[in-house]
Image (tube, rainbow, N blue to C red; front, top):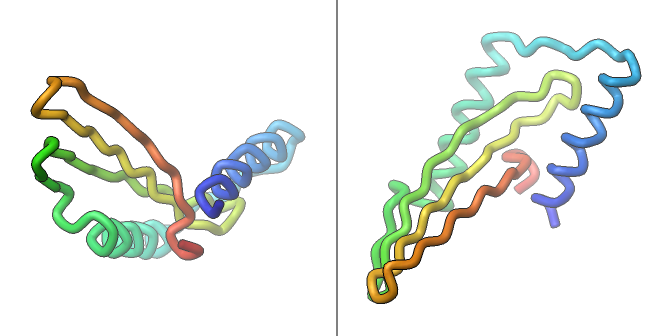
Length: 101
């Protein structure tokens, strides 16, 4: 649910900016805090980003973004899963508000 709310907030921010409101630039300190929070969230949730089991292997990576207008830290997690048995693969992207997760 929180991930869905993050996507909704991003959509609302885009609509507000289209309506003429100026976006707020992130300071270097805010960007650094966002990067550190995203790294902590990723490590706690995904470890080193590699998970291997009997069905296959998943490799996860992330990017972070501080939205100055919303004053929120977002993380986008990319997961690639490769099934050893079938050779099939799955790709997913999720966006989460790091501080509300």
